[in-house]
Image (cartoon, rainbow over all chains, first blue to last red; front, side, top):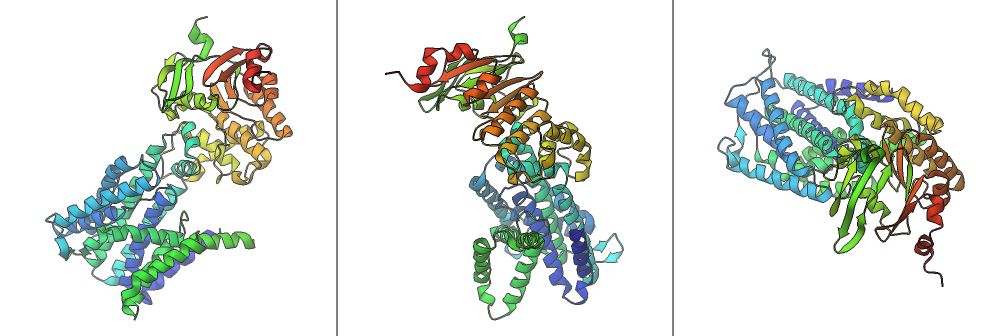
Length: 307
Length: 252
């Protein structure tokens, strides 16, 4: 009940936010929030640390940019193609990586994501160092002009809410239940007859698809897909967002993404501009040492204690 | 009666070597249908290794394993489970972050065929609640239905483990030290529970507590250094001087 009220308030705030805060900044925030929530599906609920999620985020960003700009697909379809190709890529990478555990899984996903990075650096259609520029935002449902930032914002908000609901449903579904069982006790889940690798693989594909959706949306907002999107820094950043917000909590990663994106934005324009990585690194260390459950995780724990 | 009808589980020359050390040595084990069969032996005799081989958590170096006459030597753990051979673990095998009811439901859920359905609400599993509660009642856990399992006492966790295993209606239950680390009261409860659930089922258990073995088991196989030392009912086995020697060392 309380959670529902909380989400209601959050949604109301997001609906009025663009009248108070610069919409483009908010859109960036929402894209990364969706990215972090998608990532949380595999790290927080699947128990697998992927260090290559930039491949899905950035890969989808490029694909969407290309199909909208060059093929002239409508915006919505462009997003779906981006998410779909991220799912396909997730299927392939998952096939190679999912049997590995712990650090090996992280290393394999990182290595494969680096391969994807080099493909995008050298492929013709990506524009190399310059990135894929001038992607038209197009029209939502063929009517609403997305060139208008406010319209674009509500479109992005809709995408975020849909993505968020898909993730929340997946976590609280029969599938999510088995995924939780596997995370809790993998051997026992196996002995009950579940092929655990297939469940992890599906979680990985879902996570990749939604990370792709986030990347695709980002391309439409900024009309640009760049190498930053597929760079391993992005893979690292999403780990930070998820841990800071709260691993394995539904809303935590979105909050973590909000904090990180806000800090990056304000610090970059202030006197600490050159020190952003240092500040973020410090936050990361403090978070890991003192607030292991993350912002939302610690809040949950505090509420539990006081009632 | 031919062998397949009589024996649910048969191994032939089952052997497992770890880098030159033979943990299980040429074991020919036959488990009769509807028996409660115990596997005993001193520490390091290879009981748990045999268990891991039978449930495919380890791959045998040599030998074959047959369940109901089907060769399962090359099957995967989850496949064995779907054939009705369910194991428990030495350390209690529960899902600690879930409630007792959810634990049992995870086992029941497979037959529903919706385990990959990530778009269905959790409430679609409520049809299983009745059966889950029945199973919890059977093992005396009705008070714990909505308790998070991680906080439950140890003996209750083991009971829950049995309820979860029963949910799969196994033909053959493999219990790895079901009473290990329990107080006398819990041992008594679990012993009665095993007797209760052994109806129409076969149970193969590793057990250290000879009291439990003597009251429960129809047949006992004694392992020593990976090989079968002797086999028989409790009286036969317990009067065998070689068994005493294996446990106590050579009498001076």
